[in-house]
Length: 325
Image (cartoon, rainbow, N blue to C red; front, side):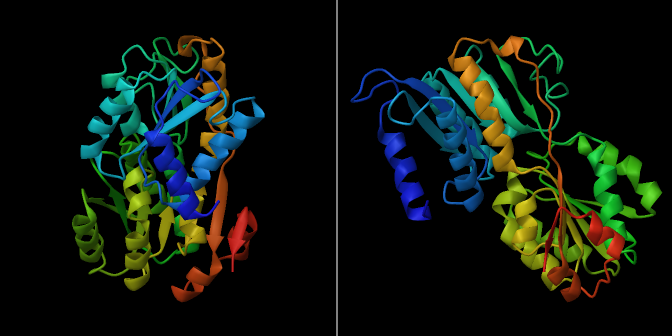
């Protein structure tokens, strides 16, 4: 689907009253994401959700109506968007990212919520346990704390000369459960950890540029909607300052980043459609165990490695699920 068609479709969906249809009553789904509707990754997630729901017998405009809200990496917008979406009283809510769940939890205390791209639902207070969520919330996790060690090991293998690594994150939106794991993994890779918090694009540019003033540095980008929205700025800064970087999502690498290890957001959103379907058919979130990731991908961009002057070991290249050349 072309970007222009997608934007028009989202706009028409927003204008279409939930619960009404020329063909009769429809089930209502509210979706809240942290990206922008025009972003290719948002489009990919939208298509995966629609595709899987269609496979399960749900067709937009026929027996379901999907209402979207986006907070575009700005947590200040999340609360207002959640209040508006919850006020429409959909049959089920799909929350993409931890801040989306937090905002919807405040405004939809009884509505069923399915989450996805969430790192620590137990620690965040969304569910009682993974096996028995309890309450009105369940869904799909994304990154385990142990991922931090894997990210650092792969980065050090690709760029053995680095001595410092900046952890880039937005303190208001990033899954901070990962920070203790990063700190615990640092000694094994013999790196100095430099926290690089940023709340907006200006602070992001300042933090990375300041870090780059000293040599032998690398970047670790935390998984979050904030770097997703600002990924072109991050990619440009990494290239300008010649900083090897580990990214959390595959699209960073296909768009020019050095390497990534993690899940595909669109794949996980597609999986979440199965729980949306079950809730629409009468299941309670309390009875649906939280699902963990079933697919991790390691991507490596050799073109970017060459531009950074890195000689990536053949053994590391062989580990990659996808190599960009």
